[in-house]
Image (tube, rainbow over all chains, first blue to last red; front, side, top):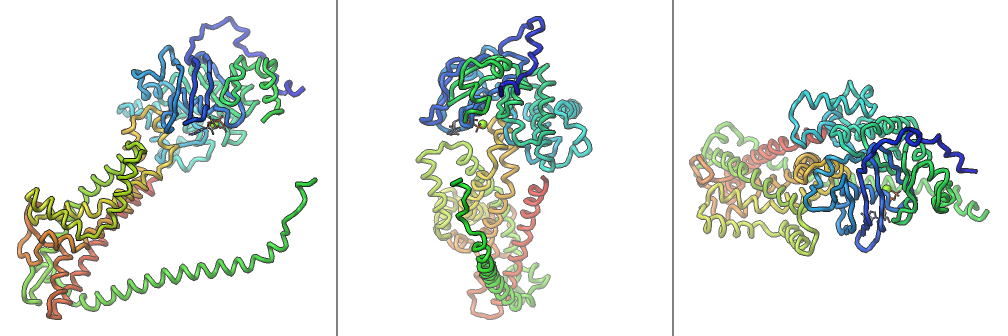
Length: 271
Length: 296
Ligand SMILES: Nc1ncnc2c1ncn2[C@@H]1O[C@H](COP(=O)(O)OP(=O)(O)OP(=O)(O)O)[C@@H](O)[C@H]1O
Ligand SMILES: [Mg+2]
């Protein structure tokens, strides 16, 4: 039975005394259209703090669209329409008095393709602090080092902080981009296939990093890699054609899915 | 297995490679010829100018004002006048041009109105320079009472080169990858911070490349200066942008239109000076551009 391949040890959280976890993101009847194309259909999802939520599903099912809606990055696409509500810690992110700048400061994002700025490694990390008006040199230096350490890339770059970030390998660039997000100490980290361009070693590093970050951050991660989802996430949402087919504990999704489409997908009999 | 059957004959393809390589050579030769032709024309032009003018280049020529006697005539007022004019043209055209480009690319909605404006800007680049001279004459010289001053000429020249700067800047801004913009927005940057810290630094090399061509044109243009009545015979140096002045192309034009052959040689010497100023100015722009390009 193929399902066994993903059999993971039952997550610790379930065994320990239940911890009080607040909801960070609550999506309510959310729809999204690119022009006439209905890309997200009546999405209802609640995500808890200090958990890793994986979003899986075949190509084109709306995973990136959804994660980009969570920090309103879809606003950049012309002709986008949304309906319904997404509440971030109880505040509707679509409401006028919730500035996108605030939302994106509290919610960091790591993109599918590493996108460092054409600046030095140091300036890449300092960028976020600088745009928020932080001028204190000591604080900036400390934060740059701390973020690079957290992203498990410090040892590789500590001697070349003032060299171009473009001189780094793809995997290093991706960890740099993770560090860049961490520098602002966000509440939530959105990651869109952060390891799809990485080799197995870098992938493992990023996965370990996610495990560490979970202590403090809530992480929502899109991935095409089933093993990855089963290894690192607490909850998994299965998207199909813009709808959420199933959303449950990762253990349940991978071992005992309710919907046959979920099962077909994770066993590879699908799309 | 239907779809593994070979329909492509690799040997035949390999036999065709020599023909393709020959074509490859022929095209290379054609492009070389085109470049060579341009290069030879340029050399002939320069050789003519230098053979006529080089012997007339002297410290006196640079230090003297205009004169009716060729042996005393110099180019001082024109050189200084051109520098003054460019001191108006460079900041005005860059600010207006880049500003307009940023607005059109980053802020303006993509509707029929912007497309209309866009089309007009591109068309303006092809309008004869005399027309810009007439516009300058009406607007700056007459309506704003600037007379035939440095400011009037500088503003007119700025208008003339504005379309080129706008279009070049738009191209450069458009070439900034979407991913970099998203990275900045993702960290909570406002639009203006994103433009200032991501778009402009990435676009500056392209903006300058286009602007260099535009500035070169402004230095060499004669017609608009004639139309707004810039004198060719000036025996003093301007003290502010409101003074009247003369510029190199005016001076050169004046000399070439005189009957005495001596003056034609002076014109050639004047062209050499103009070329040198052009090269100096463009080197600065290239230097700035490379600084930004090579930085990372
Ligand atoms: N900017 C856009 N304009 C129009 N349609 C879009 C746009 N971006 C995405 N779409 C469409 O919306 C649907 C969902 O796209 P999305 O990028 O969210 O898919 P995805 O699940 O992330 O796929 P993948 O796994 O391949 O990244 C697709 O049908 C796509 O063609
Ligand atoms: Mg995607």
